[in-house]
Amino acid sequence: MKDKILELLNEKKYNSLFELLLECNAVDLAFLMGELENEDMIKIFRLLSKDSAAEVFSYMEPDDQERLISLFSDRELHKIIDEMYFDDTVDLVSEMPAFVVKRILKTAAPEQRRLINEFLQYPDDSAGSLMTIEFVDLKSHMSVEQAIEKIRAEGIDKETIYTCYVLDDTRQLIGIVDIKDLLTAGFDTPVSELMQTSVITAHTLENKEDVARRINKYDLLALPVVDRENRLVGIITIDDAVEVIEEETAADFEKMAAITPTDESYFRTGVWRHSRSRIVWLVLSLLPNIFSGSIIAFYQSHNPALLSLTAFIPMLMGAGGNSGSQSSTMIIRGMATDEIALKDFFRAAWKELRISLLCAAVLAVVNGVRIALQYNSTLTALMVSLTMLITVITANLLGCMLPMGAKKLKIDPAIMAGPMITTVMDIASIVIYFNIAIRLLGTASRL
Image (cartoon, rainbow, N blue to C red):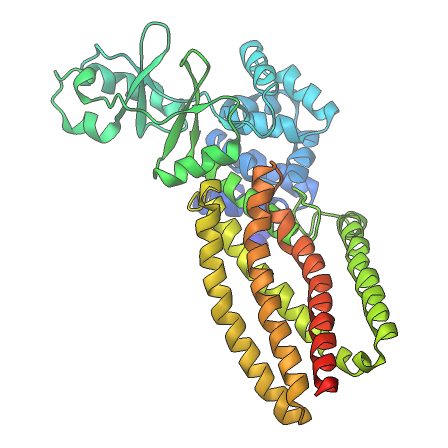
């Protein structure tokens, strides 16, 4: 598609190019625009219709948007800002450098500029920063015919019309009505007879991740956002909720992998910034090795017979770290989907204990049999098996308790998943192993 577009552009077949652009999906076209040189990008963009141009622009990466804005005249920038949905405009302003923001606000209409400044005052992680003001509001005394006429008149400029919001004279939210109910009811039916008065809402200062999960939980297309007086100030649509959930998931994966989260995409982030987000955690990951090495040296200095047992330490440390990570992943996932709450602490711990007993028993038996056959040493097999049993049970319980404890302390549970559990279990497995070995070796020597 890119080659075809450039070919038509170079041959100045603008009519054919215009027809081809009409067939392109806005998301695909936004990606393609980012791969073009500035001169080709602006030429193609100017061939798009007014509505298509605004939609394509909203899907472009911030770096590409900044490039394109630098090529716009003030008149072109005003037209784009005027056609974009309001929440996309706010996102654009929040991501652009100060000198670009100044130019955007300069070209925006006075009322739009006032609203943008108002929205930028909401915290970045709040529902207010995510919402849009483009929705259809109705009155309860309206007939279905009047409601439909209003939707026809205003709906073209709104982000969604599938759900309409019924407000009183003070703009307090008193109900919602679906477009399906309006279209299937008689024209004379009052909106008050069709609206649902039990409405799920969000507050402007509520955490946007909680709001996104609520939209997912109740299978909503949009969620109304109200202020302290229950006045409707905006709505959050499903596409914005999905984006928040994706960002949250990506951040959790990065934290669990001991990488400082970033909003930038992989290829658009420089090598130095990638390295900087990992170096701190890599340096910190060396600390357990310092402690574990000191612990091994301490035990071996008091009992040289333990030297032959160090070959099994990596396996035991790995089993503990892996078991803890499995447990923490399931707990974090359950908390993220609201399946597990803090009040379920003992219930979750009891379940993980039973799971760990089964897993630990299997691992202990398999490794015990292998070591007994491979090394012809029942005592060594017993030491490793007992250590494996206790280590896996301990790791599973830690994998359950640490994330829930972090949640209680208002710390992101994902931080606990990787580095913390691995660090604790590396040290714990060595201590458990050598203490069991010392006792069994002492017993064996007395026999």
